Length: 474
Ligand SMILES: Cc1cc2nc3c(=O)[nH]c(=O)nc-3n(C[C@H](O)[C@H](O)[C@H](O)COP(=O)(O)OP(=O)(O)OC[C@H]3O[C@@H](n4cnc5c(N)ncnc54)[C@H](O)[C@@H]3O)c2cc1C
Image (cartoon, rainbow, N blue to C red; front, top):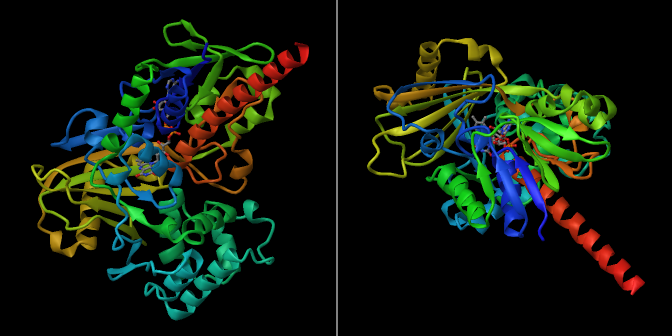
């Protein structure tokens, strides 16, 4: 008989794990507290402490409206792309050559980071050398950093995890202009925080993965279809067809342990759900709230979760009555919002286009009134797209998330837990667990796959040794 797995959390991490396990014949039950699957990806801002406001015409239901908002995928999101392939939706994600990291610099001046047709590290070095957003001297210095990082220069100090990215950049001669106009916008977009906040090692890992490996890794995709039809609906259908049970509006309130195993999960109605394996795919704060005091005090593995911190995100989606010809990603320097994503509407029946403006790591912005945030957003749009100054606003949606991304501060990578917990039948998934990646869809997917593989491999090994013992006896 197949083993049973209780997956708690219906975000991308839990869904990916449930997909892999249910298609391998495991009896999977997935619990999600909300009325829809998708977690933070469907950005309704309905998690604890989150809030949203809506004006004008946007469809109701988180998954339905999220379908209209642009999602950004990177070429280095290899685990996510593999999952999309298995779901039959990979062909909907194109990485157009003309879509690049584009910086909106004071002026305003738009400058794109090139993607020359040469292998990864050489391409990155060449694109830094030709990046017109910085004076020549700064370009030379950026190039120097890339080269040192790529070659694993022995001069890269050992204390990179304990220093901020900014501190390290200053140390290696990056000017105020280079830090403010290149590194900060890039780090905000790729890690969800400022270079002054993240560790130097988080910054270097991001640069290595995105720009110094395969050329395709720095490619960008803003698919015309939303994340609901690319990932969430197909994964839900596949899991349900494999016989998994999905329970929405079901909140776990406590994890129960005996001396060395998890024995059940208490639900909000007081019932207890039990299984052979427990795969917890919740944000770290919600997980800590489910743990008994004993687990937190006995195991540093759990105790250190309480030291993790998050970066905030303010997202404002605004629908305006004009169109953009191509998908675009603009990284903003010295502005209130930190990036703008837009794409043409996939449905020609739908009027106008949606621009998503995001500001990360600025919790004070979450306190500002809606109208003020909208006014600022519209002035950013007018600044970035001078041709759209007369565009009419058809609707807007503001999502305030105080805990949007794991903050990659100095020391954080030492606190992120491996997926296998000290309890053999308990695994942790989530974009904040130790994946070596910043908190993102890719990290969530990877963590879900790792948890599922850990269960599959452990069971296969146990079965083999059982057979071996039987053969030895007989
Ligand atoms: C505004 C925004 C936009 C983003 N856009 C992108 C993008 O374009 N590209 C990209 O790569 N990444 C994007 N991300 C990041 C991505 O959404 C996250 O990295 C990803 O959702 C993390 O997945 P997860 O499964 O680890 O956690 P979550 O998505 O947080 O899922 C956890 C789930 O657990 C549920 N839950 C919590 N507590 C309980 C409980 N007690 N019982 C039962 N269920 C519970 C929650 O409701 C939630 O559904 C975005 C994030 C935000 C905030």
